[in-house]
Length: 271
Image 1 (cartoon, rainbow, N blue to C red):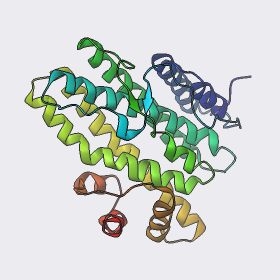
Image 2: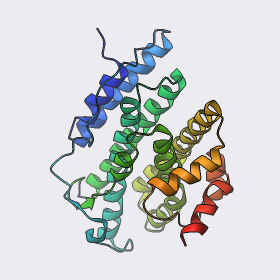
Image 3: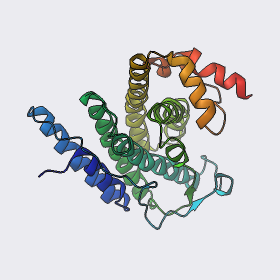
């Protein structure tokens, strides 16, 4: 019997090494899409994901206030910036597999799983692109400390699919659309062409990940007969720790299906 999609997801979540985790995830994604193209989709199934995914011994995980800040004008600072991006991408791999496994008991169209498997596969490629950049610069993922709070949003929304969609793709990943152009300019300015190319790939593909969140959030609200904007505001206020901080990349957010009246009221309310 082939593994169900939920079982595949748990295999990824319980693999600690970043390169091994992403290789396994990419193999499972290929298996899922091959079965879909053959008209014989794999079963979604059910499996119990860990509350927290397996992680390598390095990087050391620190409270956000304890993570050293480095200036991107220096080579060391740019390495630190890429290391932070790699850490974000590895967490994103787990977040996308986690939404598949954790909410597998909730009936959803097959397109829901197509979207999150594709997003997880792309995040795995992003992680490896950035790791390649780090290694080309004489470093590696795990060489520096990283943010310990990255998984908090997953834990806080573990019991609510709508809340997970609101907080992870529609808030956290949307924030990536706001800040990535500035990172791209840093590496362009310093002629770091390999990192520049990797970040441009990430920036282009992250729009779709935010859009998947918006699409399925609106779909669920439509099925439930609720107002998506009101539900989004209530869930973000309840589950997101922090404020939504401008400036916002309004053009890319619009491309991802996030209108300004979703996020601006939350920014104004938390000033």
